[in-house]
Length: 67
Image (tube, rainbow, N blue to C red; front, side):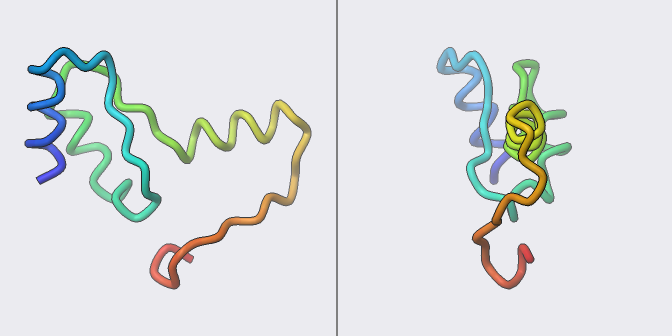
């Protein structure tokens, strides 16, 4: 479902795809492989920003499944 949605977004002119939930990142590689536009990984980007800000102990609020 997410790969199909990503393909439709790309066809509509999207410059990139962003999955906005931690759990759905389980299929991020498949979604990225379905399109030619970049998939922004919120886990990597969040980590990059936290590291750049010198943060070492961020709090993650998430579902039990994600934790």
